[in-house]
Length: 119
Image (cartoon, rainbow, N blue to C red; front, side):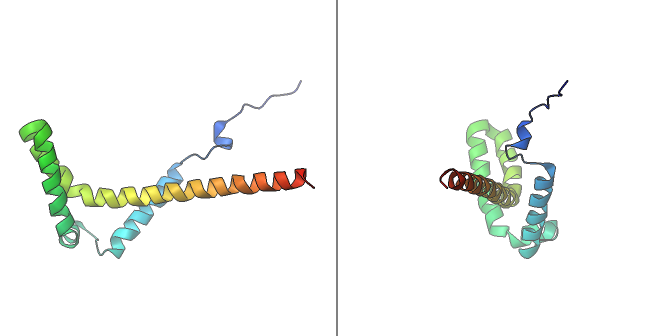
């Protein structure tokens, strides 16, 4: 009797794995080092202006929606917003590159398949 292998979607679709996340985090750490940010004091020193802008924007938007609690929570979130935006940028670029490579691989497969059909 033949054994049937169970179909796994991960064999045909691109799946973001912990290895990809680790690579994105290493690239983020490298980007922070290139910006001269090695610890918390250097973060405050190097990104002073973006931090102030994000704190003001987050405080005002938090206060407008949630009052005093939103004001203080917005201030806390505004302090880490520049680092989060850098991390999200690195992550988005990594995901985009991963998808481009995946789509190019399928384009090559279909081009070769199409070429064999028309020979």
